[in-house]
Image (cartoon, rainbow, N blue to C red; front, top):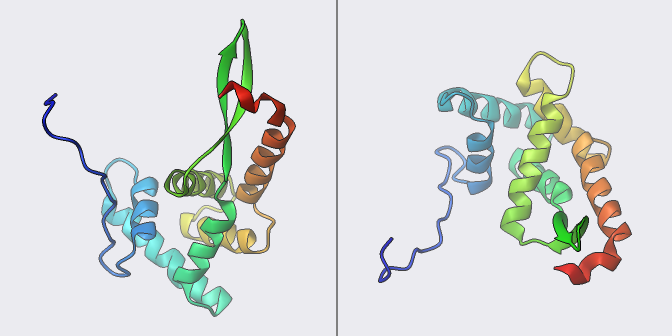
Length: 155
């Protein structure tokens, strides 16, 4: 590792159709076995399905859903005096956004439908109604962080 050059901050690229970084993050997260063209097809079909279901701009609907799922704090395990405590730690927007995308995809994969397009679009619609599994995960994390707020000095 060179000592003279500092590494710059890497920003994610834009997707080719919507020119949006959030969609590109979703595409890279949904990617399985290197089949990026399949991931593109799934995400673009989800956006078309959202536009058909909600009669809104699907991109703003997606942003709103991700914003609702994004956590402000997460729990990190800290070993203090032989015992392990769950310590709440505030996170930045970018890290929270990547966690929210991960939770959204996990919740959509647990749904019973066969088609990933239908699963993901229905999870996004449920998120808008504050009733999806990803929303429950966010609320659970915030509840646990509130309960272990007294351990925050272990940071």
